[in-house]
Image (cartoon, rainbow, N blue to C red; front, side):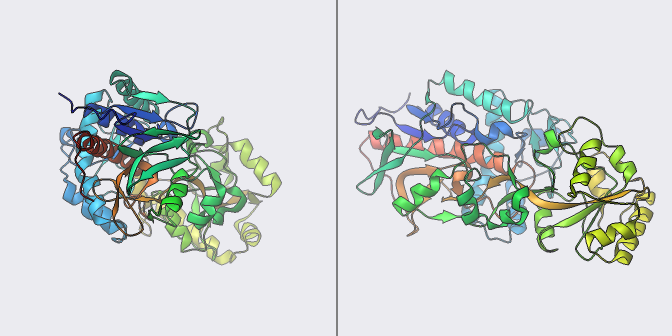
Length: 487
């Protein structure tokens, strides 16, 4: 039986944002017996979660157990913290790791399908190796992020959570040192607990320049794949109410070719037989390095690298993709965006790199991949994880091509309202503001400089959303009894 409701408030819990984090928070709060209002600034639900592959990183799940994968929250925590140099908040990160399995099981109970089978990509349901993991934790749901959103929204409807689309929150209602609701259209909607799940700031160029200056490396090549509602509304709330922000300078920028305009689902993929060389003309990385770490590698080489491939590789690209298409590469070569030359020496001149360095690097590449073993950068292991053969065709047939690879695809930002291990939002004085919680990209402290595995942001949204909804409902129950939560 649910707790009695405080009729002095319009709702028990108000959730701001109906992406993955907000939907999870609203469902979780409603399951705890709260009357919930879910507000969405856009005309539809889903946010960036709906645009994603839906993959979640999680430890000690039934899916892992079904495949014989041994894992634990302490192991995930150690890996997560070490990869981020212990620069993220240990308490919230431990909560995230400990709650991840329960969130996966919760989603399975709601109807999400994640079969206990091996997956070789972020688009095949099952368990996959997702980037820089120490053990497989990438849980890929059926029907991708869209499927997650649909399952959560059906649960929202069953639980009678009120949904208001086109409702952008302007401010918080703060009285007597606590949050008591939100302001929208100049009117107050009241509740003793509010969850901010309004997304990141990738869709606001000014905020991107302020909080993720590395996005400027790509210049005009930068493109954003986050939802249009990711306008950083939480930043304004922080500035108006003395709330702490955490994660400045961090976000996920995927490495893409200078001519790419879309996420790889639409743009396609570069040819397997390609070599990445730095500004000195030498090979400098595993060309299939996980996106969690590849931008950092580029940063060590001046911010970008060259990708070099031959004409056989260009011609072998499957047609029909928006960017990595044989004819599109030629079109970009005609514009001068892709460099094209009959010999590697001529190409090196166009690239402004030492010709002997480039030719030696390509010769070494060809020798290594004829044997199917990359002694220098261990790319054969990255290829094997994808189920691909590491015996690659040589880069030998002119004309040869080179294109700049840049951290140009902005996926998500990590500057959010600093939260504690209960998802309570902290003020600049380090104390929690009673009644205020945050989840997803609007929450800071867990998403760090290094994106941990595939599914870091989706898991972060759903885990924190579920916890925030539960905590907010508990706050509302205390309020209904006239009690006060300890600060």
